[in-house]
Length: 520
Image 1 (cartoon, rainbow, N blue to C red):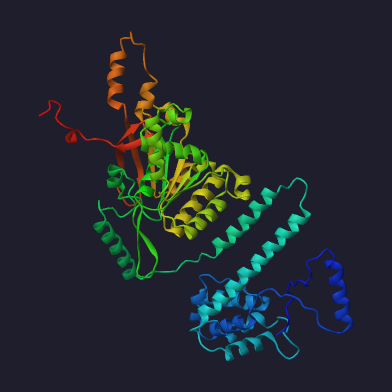
Image 2: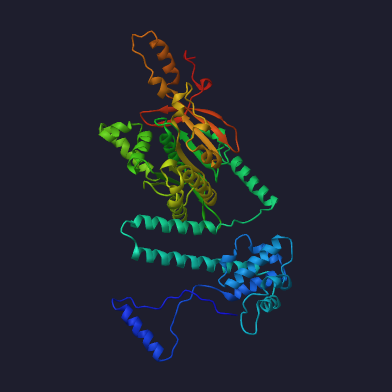
């Protein structure tokens, strides 16, 4: 076996005179004819040999590792070449053995004066044990390769920080390092492969049983708005839900209402294994890229205390209202609602923070307000905005599946809505609609006709004033949530009530639920 070059780092003392001390140590070691200590990059040649031997003896071993192990994960270049060549043969429906591989390596450089590569292939097969441990060998090789990539990223980070140009900001270096780390983390997601259909059926029955046992018969998280829940079955795990609308339609107000309703209803129970499981509601993470945490809190406080948010901000409240604010705020503080108000973060940073939140506190619902304020990687940003949005929506959908939580992302609509007589939004009104519409499991639009009718108010003496007043009476205090796309449910429109002074959405009272007007 020929030796391969590896990156090594001389040991150095952490003092001001470290280079001098290190040099004197090297000279002393050379004078004493002693080997100098070097750190080798992490690797395991024996594991590579064992895996290759198992593949050459039984090609089924390659199937056990091909889903995640690539040729570049091998430390030894010859091993990488053998693995890649064997994989090509197997994928072509041929047998990969020392004999069939011989023709590809007959002219290869000998490993040693007395050992050619074809002879080495024979030794690998002769010393192979069993394919039972092939997966473990593959994981060992893969994990060591990831560690080597981490070392390379760390080296580049240090070197760039030392020799960075004047116009390169630390923020750009941090973003580049985060992007590379995120890419490395994403590369390792090779999944669990195929599930037996019986296992999938068991999961489906468990979901149906949970919906049957839960009050209201929902398979997902309740939004606190019964009509919306009935149309969607609740917020489903791993779904990417896009909530879109024109400015002033109430997107943030609706999603804030939902976030607090979910957090307020949170209840948990301890499982036999000691873990905690949510039996109602959930823990909510809220990325507020536009509004501050204080502004969001004020909205929720206004909604719960039934005091105008404008009055709260300007201090126009009396003593009783202030006392009510304090009481409500004490109740609200117990809700597991976590707000990140950092603006302009990338999809990689958002994913990392969401993973950390789930690991440290738990997470059942993630909200992003709003999608167009997220940034993609520097490469996609330089390409064009459509590619950047595609990267963001794809990343959000992947994050929803990884964390197994619903993600609600708010989105702006294009101005073409304003040019139509019927202002109700459609899927085609989504900005960069291709990727958003494609990646989303559910697309909902918030629409308040009251907003447009109010702006058409004629003068009180005008002949059309009564007609306007009648129309205004019909639409006042009402809102629509239009479900334009739903992978596992019907599309349609849900009527909600909206109290603008409290920025609160609620269930709209039905006519057949209203008391008789004559008092009977």
